[in-house]
Structures are given as structure tokens and as C-alpha cells.
Image (cartoon, rainbow, N blue to C red; front, side):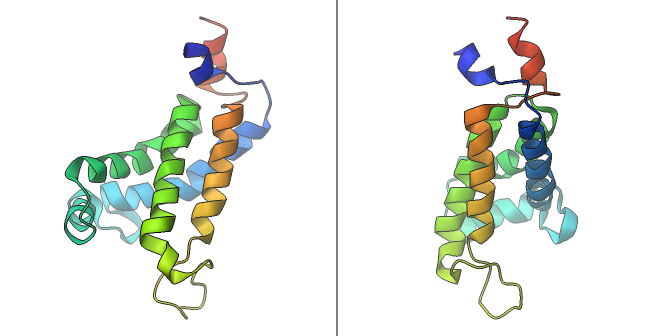
Length: 148
């Protein structure tokens, strides 16, 4: 189990993927948890998920925390496969539940009711590569695999 969770190579490509995932996903988590970047913060997001979306409270909390702390775990390369899989599930859920009705494309010109699911598919693909390949070099995971 330990090997499966932390296994990785000393390759630099996963480092690039981890940094990219952090840069594009962390701001969305910070909106939900902290209210940064025009977000509603924990209380507002929790209320939206449990009220408007009718999600159970525990699911709302897991989404908020996963999208907020998951990218930080990716950045440092700790529990990379778990964090990447968790965020992938969140991205796929968001694509199907909240964005599918808006079509594929990001709403660049404001011509549709909301954002499409293009970003979510791209993020999920990037994250799945980390689930399969692990954290790579310059990661806590890489440093741990030789110690156990």
C-alpha cells in the first residue's frame, strides 16, 4: 500500500505537472475556502453546495478542503497520487454537475450562461498523469520512497 501511494520516478516532468496543477487549481480552492479572488469563502460556498446544489454537508466540506489543500499537497509533492485523484474526482463531478449544460468551451466572450467543462477535462488529464506517474523529483514522496 505504501509503495502504491508514494511510488514515483526521479523524473522532472511530474514536477512541471505539479506546479501547473497548483497554479490553476489553488485559486479556485482559495475562492471556496478563503474568499480570495472574488470567491464566497467557506460559509458562502458551503451554503451554495448544501442549499442550491443540495449536496450533503460532508461532501461540501470535502470539495472545499480538497480543492484548497489538494493543490498545496501537489506543490510540495506529498501524497501526490491521493491528492491528484481527489481533485480529479472533484473536476469530473464539477464538469458533469455544474458545467455540462453550458457546453464544452470556456465562456471567453460571455456568450453562454456559464463556463463549459473544457477546463475540467484538461485539469483531470493533467492530474491523472500524476496519479499514474507519481510526484517525480523534488517532492516529499520521492524522498520518502527510499526511506521505507
